[in-house]
Structure formats: C-alpha cells, structure tokens
Amino acid sequence: MATGAQITAGPRDWQIVQQEADGYGTFALAGRVTRDAGEAGTVVARVVDEATGAGVVPWQRAAPDGDTWSLNLRAPAGGLYRIETGFSTTDEPRLEWARRGDLVHHVGVGDLYVIAGQSNAAGYGKDAVYDPPELGLHLLRNNLEWALASHPLNDSTGSRHPVNSEGGNPGHSPYLAFARRLKAALGYPIGLIQTSLGGSALAQWRPEESGELYRNLLAVVAAAGGRVKGVLWYQGCADAAEGWGAAYGDRFAGFVTRLRADLGQPGLPVLTVQLNRFAGPAGPGEDLHWSLVREAQRAAARDLAGVAVVPALDLGLSDEVHNSAAGNLTLGLRLAEVALARVYGRGGYGVPDLAAARRTGPAEVTLEFSPVADRLFDFEVAPEESVFTVTDDAGPVPLASETCVGATIVLGLARPLSGTAAVSALSGHHPRGLPPIDVTTHCPILAFHRAPVLEPTGRSAGSPIERSSPDLAPNTPAAWSRSLNRPAGTGAEGEGEGAGQGA
Image (tube, rainbow, N blue to C red; front, side, top):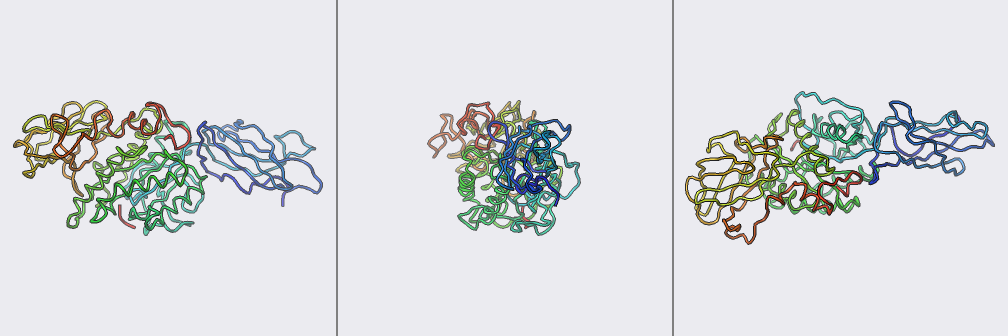
C-alpha cells in the first residue's frame, strides 16, 4: 500500500453538509496514515474552491493517535469544494508538497431538505420537460451514496432501504426545480434526501401506527448527518377515505410534533402541498373526504408553527392523479418562493387563503383573502362555473354573481341567507372551475371546506368567535415569524429550528 493519509470516515464525493446557525458547516474527517517504519510526521488537511483551487480553509494539522487521525474542518456555506489531505513529514516542511493523501470531490455546505410523502412526492410525472441536473444540486440516493441530483429522484437502484422502493420506476419530481430556485437565490448548494413512497398512507409515517417509513426517514437523515433545514411533505390521497379523512389534521400534527422532537429541531420548517385533483372515479362519499383532507392541510398551516402549504389544484396531470412534469416545475417553484419568504425572509411570496367570510347583505357574502400581493382575478367566470358553493339551513344557495374587488371576492346570492351559513371552495376529488389567482404571483387560492359565514357583528351563528382575520392569515410573514418566536422579516439562515401507485 502506498504511504500517506487515508480517509476512512467523513464526507463523501458530492455530499452537502447542513450549515449551522453561523453559516458554517463542519467536515468531520477521520482516517489512518501509512508510513515507513520510524517515519515522523502529521496528517494535514485543507478545503479549496473546486472551481479555482484557491484556499477556503487553510492547512490544518490533525490530532494524531498512533496510525489514526481525526480533524474537523469548518467551511462557510458555499462550494463546490475539494477536501485535500496529506502526510507532512519532518523532512518536507512545505505543506503543499506533503506526501499524498485522499481527496474528497464536489462537496458543499448548504441546506438539506428531506422529501417525504406519497407518489407526487416521489415524482410520478411521466411527460417531458426541461429540468436538467446542475452542479450544487445534490441528492442522497436510495443506495445511500451522494450524487448529482437528477430524475427520477426516488430511483431504487441498489437501494439500501428497500422499505420505500417503488413498484415501478418513478418519473419527474417537483423538488429539483425547488432546489434550483433556492440555490440561485441563496448562493449555496442544496441537498435533497428522498424518503417518499408512492401509495403510502399517513399511518406509515406515524411511529404510533405502523411507522415503517417514519423510522426509515430518521435512519436516512442520520446517514446524511442528522440535521436538515426542512421537510418537503406531499401526502394525503391515501387518507381521503372513510375513517381517515376527518382525522387527518390531528394525525398529521402528531407526525410533525414527533419528527421535530426526534430530530431535536423544535422549529423545523415543514413545507406541504394541498392535495391535487383526482380525475378518476371516486367511491361513495369520497368527495367529502378529499375536501376534509384539503381543509386539514390548510388548517395545519394556520395552526401549526412553522408549517406552510401551497396549492396544486391548478396543475396539469400526466394521468388521473399524478401531476405532470410541467405541473411539477410550477409546484417546485411555488414551494421555493414560499420557502424564501417564510424560512429565509428573502422575498418570495405567500399563498392567498381565506381569512374570513362575512355576510355583507341579505343576499351577499364577501370573502376576504390574505396574503394578496395585488388583487385577485377569477377569470370572470359565470356564476354557474364558480369554484365557490354556499349552503345555509335551507340547503344549497345558488350564486347570482361573483366579483373580485382587490383582495376580496363578493358573492351575490340568488336568495337571502337563512340561518347558519357556510362557504366552500374547490370541493371534492375533481373540483370544477378555475381557482381565482393573485394577479402578481399567479398563485391560486387554497381550497377550503365549510368556512362559517360571519354575521356583520363578526360572529357566525353557532360560532363564538371569528377564527381568523386578514392580518393573521396563514402563511403571512407576521404569522410565520410570530409562530416561530422571532421578529417578522428576519430569516433563519442556519439550522432548521428557525425555520405503490397512489398520489
């Protein structure tokens, strides 16, 4: 064996290390040294910019322990870097000419995001779209080797954790586009960790239930270093059924709480997606459960600190339930914009969500949305094509008109309201119509289910207080920052605490 320094533990080629709160990450190295009998010297290591060869972390001397050594190198967020080692003998004091040592290529310090959920998280887009690999966007593949991220992200070739191996090869995912947008905005690498599985139910992500995918997630995160910046969660189709839909909100909240505790990151950001549409036939009563799951996902972003949600009902499909590749591109960018706004405090945008529904006349309901960058636009659809439905004690209330006014939508009713009233938007497994959008961001509103219509006093019949107001609507910078106990407008650049065939 050639003499010199060998690395036996530490970062591997293509690995992204999660940065710490001060914007630095640690490359923890350990190894052995092979030398001639009686030869004295020490192992040295440094970090250089891979593009230029310029030094980033100067030569450091390792702590010797016989023929083994260890050393921690702290590098700033950025890269790609190369880690160099060598054996500096007493006969050659010039470190650049130290005897050979192992090298680690294409590594970086940045942010890690773990991907969890079912098939639209795994990426089942089967059509063509331009979304190529890019240096600085890396993936811990299912074989537990780091690599340049490329589709399909949930490739099961050589998997070391077959519990989430797909029954067929997946396709295009939203999350390469997500990572690309963050890297461009933040200026450092993004690493992805894929743990999702098509068709998986929430029970598989809850250790209190079967929990096998949850345990796998923890094991894979540990293999990546043990800490991540955030979680990308897209799941719910498997739970849009009798006995599961109504309980989704509480069970998802339990998953979030337990995951944060087990990772030791109490404020870990969780970026979620409200269920897309299912164009195939639904079973009896399933329409209700699709609406209940979507409402639970909307409520989670309102009620759980550090949870955000983006819509998907406007996206194209590549089959009856899986988002198309073009739709995934839009979704990835949408998630990235919300992350930039909520996790990093660097621009981005929020998602228009219902803040309140008010009775503003005997036969009129005004819907207030927040945040809205400019104004809402509903494509000037006819009332019979509206995405909104209103019910009261007498049953369904037909719409006579729909008018967008700034951040509000005014619904004119065909008859006066009778008793307690509620309003829904984009109901069922395959909602009709075009969701209204924010004209600046083109992000559509979130679906909602049976929101109470408030009386002019601010109360609805049978509802003691108004549940939300425009200034505290979910996904606004004020609400997100308040929920994470930090001033609005400040970012969380370091650790995350600041921050099957089914779909």
